[in-house]
Every structure is written in C-alpha cells, then in structure tokens.
Image (tube, rainbow, N blue to C red; front, side, top):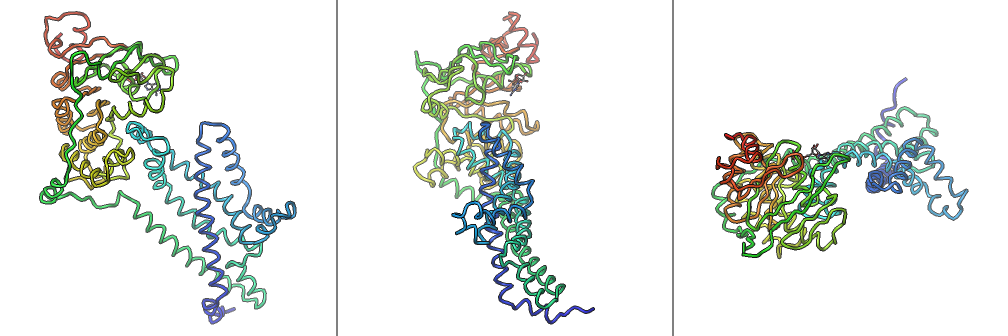
Length: 508
Ligand code: ADP
C-alpha cells in the first residue's frame, strides 16, 4: 500500500487544520499560564506552616495527580447534569477543556514551583531580612525570581506536555487537531496520511513555542552573560557621576547611651543553651571583635541582635531605646526603625545571584525609598562600589566575581542603607587566604572612620589591631572582654586572660 502524498500535502492548506492549530495554541497557552499562577499559589499553600493551608494543598496535588485527565475532562463536561446553571459555560467544550487542563496542570506545576522555591538558599532570605525587606518583598524581589529561573526548564517541559495533552480534549468535541483529523478520515478512510499530517502540525507547534520559551530561558540565564569590566576611562566617567555617601557617624559624647546594650541574652536550641545570660555594652564608634572556639555561640549572639534568631530572654537596647525583648514580638515600627540602623555582612556573602553588583546595592534603598530618585540611588551605589574598590565591576553578576570581591560588594550593600552599626559574621572565613586582606582592609577603613562594628572573627591579629575591645566567648558566656592593649600586656595574668592568650596563639 502506498501513502497518498498528494492528499497529505493538501492538508497543510486546509483552513480547518489551521483553525484547529490556533485552538491548540490558545487552550495550551491559557491552561499553562493559568496553571502556572494557580500552581504557584498551591505550592506556597503547601509550604505554609499553617495546616489549614498545607493540608488542602497537599490533598489537591495528590488528587489531581492521581486522576487521569480524560476522567477529569468528561466529568467537568458533564457537570451541568448535576448543576444545570453551569451549562452556559461548562457546556462550551473550550471552557470545560481549559478548566480541566488548568486544575490538572496546577497540581503538577505546584510541585515544580515547590522544588524551585526550596532550592533558593536560606541565606538569600536572611540577606533580605538583614536589609529589612518585608516577607512579601523578599518573595517578590529575591525568592521568586531565583525559584522561577530554576523551575523554568521544567515549566517549559510542562508546556510541551500540555500541547500534547490538549489532543484529549477531542473527547468532548472541541475541534482541535486530532478531532479535525478524525472527522476527515472517518469520511475518506485515509487514516495514516491524516494522522501523519496531524503529527506534523503538533511538531510544528511544539517546535515554534518551545523555541520561544527556550529563548526566554536563555535571556533570563545570568550565568551565560558575558562579564563586562569597565575600562579605566569608563571608570573615570562613572566616578564623575558618583554621589558621595558619607558614613553615618554617631558622635561619641560623654553620657551618651551605648550604641548596643545586650542584657542577659539567653538562647537555647531545644535543651542546648547556647547563650547563657550574655551582657555586653558596645559604645558608639567602637569596634568590638568577638572571638572564641567553634560552637561557643558567637554567631548566635550577633544573629539575635538583628532578629535572625529569636531571643528566649533578655533585652537588646539600641542607642538607649528598647529594641528587642526575649519572648516578645517588638512593635512593627520599633522593629523597622531599629533594623534599618543595623547592617549585616555574612560569612557566605549572600549576594543576590540574579542581580549585578550595582543592583545588589541599589535594591534595598529602592525598596525603602531611601534615595529621592533612581538616579541618586545609582550614583550613591556607584560611590559605594568605588569605596570598596570595585567600580570597574559594577555590571558583573556575583558568580563573575571572586570571593573577596563578592564580600566587598556585600559590605557596600550593607552600607547602602546608612546603618549606624554593622555586624560581621566571620566575614573572611569563606575566603582563600590571598583574598582575606582585601576584605579586612575595607573593614579597617570603616573602623578608622568611626563606624560602630561588631565582628565575629578568627583573624586574631586583625582583631587586636582594629578593635577597641576583644570579647572572648566560650560555652555561651563572655569569658573576657578586654582592650587589645591589656591582652598583649603579659603582666595581666588572670586565668581568663591566660586562656584568651592561649586561644589567640600568643604566649600566655
Ligand atoms: P560559633 O559561631 O561560636 O561557632 P554558633 O553560634 O554558630 O557558634 O553555634 C553555637 C551552638 O549552637 C552550636 O553548638 C551549634 O551547633 C548550635 N546551633 C547554632 N544554630 C543552630 C540551629 N539553628 N539549630 C540548632 N542548633 C544550632
């Protein structure tokens, strides 16, 4: 038997097939788009801490992933038998088909979105929190763009699946490609030629639309962007437009309250008490280094100061005003104004990978409306980048920068909100030795200019050279709080001082 090629080719000039192709594209695109949004809501509900949201979302996903689409289609199309008032719209095959595809696809897409959301590192949310960006802001600006980028290949794959699944809608008499073909071959019995043409139409649609989506995916992929370093001449030009942003210097004056006063801070993880009634005063303009063995509670201490960890008991007083109290939620206004006064730099930088160095710095001031306009915001961000020696790298993405450069951008990002105090959580621990000094130099410059700094560090010599006080923690308590001059003075022979010198690798 030979195929009738003349008939086969004639099917590509048949208006009913092109109309059917448009129907396929319409129903697939709409159900993919609506399913994408609905699936995202279902994923958020499933990840919610509220059982009232997570349980129904889990049941929804389980149910619609278990029931075959064909069953859903026939059921939805026949619902008007139960609810006659729905016949006006469910009686329309396109609408019943769309509804069935949407509810089924949303269940699959919810799991794709959930995978994307889970893969965004915790440090990203923490960096948003440290910049005092609200929950929704963190989702919108930080989490969703990254999660969407991760989910996109699977979502594109789902679009192709939807295009193919749309052929099932033929069972409820929607004249899509398969039904159009079936109607033809039941009259002329040229089954193979007709189905071959139907297959070609599908391949055409899938090829065109998956190419478009892959192009979008590529555009969103910052990892494939070419790094651009500004030349010296370009830097000079940009420098002219940069707007100086002096550091906030709170005057040390007699009788002024400390910048930070920690009173009886207590924190436990389960039955492991990590902070045992820690008291510490940090004066305005002071640089305090916190040292101590691993697991002694140093990181926990500074994370409680900006609420990355909640306090069980105790108080944090900021410039003489109540800020945090153990076991109590602070008033929104107090929290917001307090958080804006405290910047934080993390061990693992936590730069936002989908933004350039410049955008990383501009984001928080833009969110908080700190600069009068975007031109000023950009000019100030450029100034800060220049300050940390990275003006030439303004347009690079974090993955295009070395660890030391990333950390310097992270410092500039913290400075962009003009904080009064900056907390550093082991800022050089994740760096190769040759990059440590470039970061320490930036911190040293901030110290010289009178910023209040709290630095958790393992760089002992740096701590001695830059600090007004060095605090040693062990077993959740402050063992020693001393000036560097007293630490190096070997005539001080208290057991704590001897232990501290030993820990610092100095002669006891
Ligand atoms: P350091 O910074 O001095 O190395 P940390 O403050 O990071 O110490 O940790 C102090 C102790 O608290 C460690 O024993 C650590 O295992 C524990 N810890 C820290 N974070 C958590 C957490 N999220 N859950 C449970 N235990 C934690």
